[in-house]
Amino acid sequence: MSKNGWYRLGTAALLVSLLVFTCGCGIFSSVAVGEADAHEEENANLVVVGFSQIGSESVWRTTNTVSVQEALTKENGYFLIFNNARQKQENQIKALRSFISQRVDYIVFSPVTENGWDTVLEEAREAGIPVILLDRMVNVEDASLYTTWIGSDMEEEGRKAGRWLEQYLKIANRQKEDINIIMLQGTLGSSPQRGRSSGFMEIANKYINWHILDQRSGDFTIAKGKEVMEQILERYEDIDVVVSQNDDMTFGAIEAIEESGRSVGRDGDILLLSFDAVRDALRLVEEGKIAVDVECNPEQGKYLAEVIGMLERGEKVEKAYVVEERVFTKENVSGYMNSRTY
Ligand code: GZL
Image (cartoon, rainbow, N blue to C red):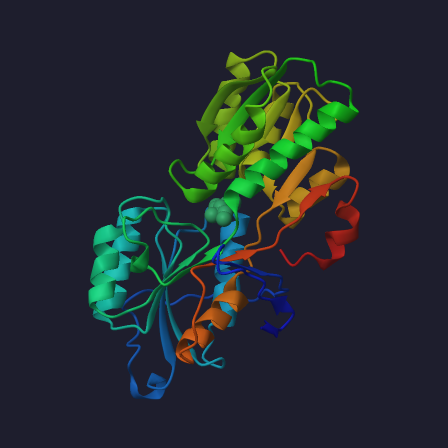
């Protein structure tokens, strides 16, 4: 299938469809759960979708929200009930139960962490409501508890960062040096934190001279990223690399590093590897402050609408849809700056 510039390439064995697509970005708005009756007369023919979003912890997250709200509009045939869980799993579970009691047609959610969803997903299944996972993944015994997952290959994102460092050290003729590495982790137990950590470690474990000095969670936010980086800088004198699992923590880490009198960049004291590739971070890649930024594409709304459309038409959907993503460095970033929508 190819529509709106994205393609489905998948083999049954992999059960993964690779889609390349382009999206736009719109105005932020939300309807809290319970404020509107999705089954009022005027909305009777709309596809009612309950969407539990993790929160608004990062630029990535707010972009992800906008992409869904812009795709699932009334004009496009949807009635969207949106809930912001403010980073709490119990708020997401409450929202999912509210969607079930409102008899929505679909539940969509990005699980803040992977565990603890079996019971509420069983309740959704008993209610006959399909569940679509967006962005993050759940860890459940029975994969039939959700219909499909749309997101990024987080392990591969971690490997991409590791491969870049491997290549960089080779070109800089530093592959024999002791390399002291700090990992700023995202929300512990979330699929991006687990995936990016395991993917990077798959590469790091090949080198006895790569030393992971410390790993601490900055919870994907600027403030926590700065706070944790300050603690780490007080404790460790000799840091060569910081692997920061999202750009917001990277922004905080740069502030802390520079306030400590040290510098970031390929010619600085500390090399920064980051994830997400939001526009403000790509500007820092252009300036040389961030050495590499591994893209994680938040614009999944259009993609979600396509999958719901397939389900509405009774078409078979894959168990997983993975978007294609790039790696940005000083060498290639300028060519993309004008086309970035977030
Ligand atoms: C990744 C997404 C992560 C982003 C962060 O798919 O879940 O959560 O990397 C966001 O910016 O907070």
